[in-house]
Length: 54
Image 1 (cartoon, one colour):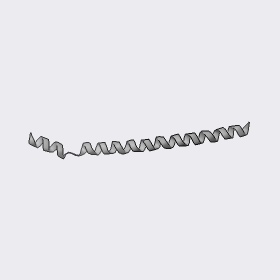
Image 2 (tube, one colour):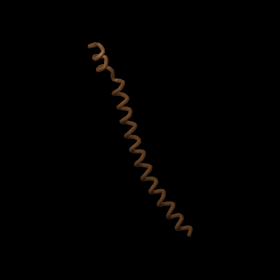
Image 3 (cartoon, rainbow, N blue to C red):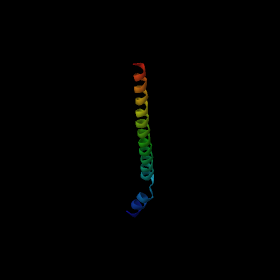
Image 4 (cartoon, rainbow, N blue to C red):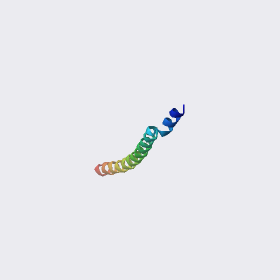
């Protein structure tokens, strides 16, 4: 039983998976923010072009 517990505490695969998940979550939050900002900017530019063509 001690061997099983010591092997469990020594195993770091789960910690690595959690670290990668946190990195992926951070990157996705940044991407969502950039897409939202660019979407607003592009929408404004299309509106100004549309108004200029009228």
